[in-house]
Structures are given as C-alpha cells and as structure tokens.
Length: 125
Image (cartoon, rainbow, N blue to C red; front, top):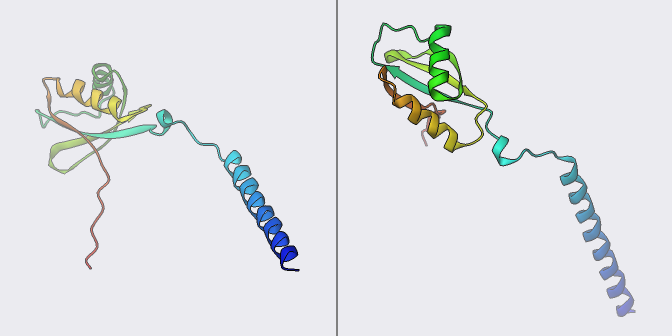
C-alpha cells in the first residue's frame, strides 16, 4: 500500500516537473531576444563648444560633426550652461560610444564631450 502511494507520488512529481520544463522551454522559444551587439540603437552625447555663439543645430554643422565622429549624429536640443545634446544613431556597444567621444574631443571647437545619462532623483527615507 505504502509502495503504491510512493510510486504514484513519484510518477506525479515527474509529470509535473516535465510539464513545467516543457512550458518553460516553449515560452523561451517564443521570445525573440536580440544579440547583445544590437541592444543599443542610439546613445546621447552632451557637447559643449568653445564658441558659445555657435549654432550647432545647423544641418551643415551636424554633418561635419558626423563626418568627424564617423557616426550619424542628430541634434536634439540645447541645454542650460551652453552645452548641446546630440543623439548618436546605430551604436552597437559602449566601445563605439567611447570611440565617438574620443574623435569629437579631438576637434578644436569642442570644449568637452560626455555621454548623456539618465539621472534619477533619490528618494528621502
């Protein structure tokens, strides 16, 4: 009697585990994940220029920046303090962003370049 209960319980447990594994495997197959290289589609940079009267939103100026950066840049908006935000399109990883920053930092008219990051306000406890 005890042996039958034990065997039945064991078979039931095996059945449940196999169903759970099959469901988990099916769910994983239905989710399309992107390779790590494709996770970043764009990044934003903050660029401050030496000449504060410069209009970096001009199309010809943005094209020159893009040429020097060897990446597609899009003007986003001005910031307080005279800096400007640009979006870098088709970026695949952090190394590419670092290379774009290095190239732009080498321009004579650029005071500094840094990656724009999202800042979160800390909650008081």
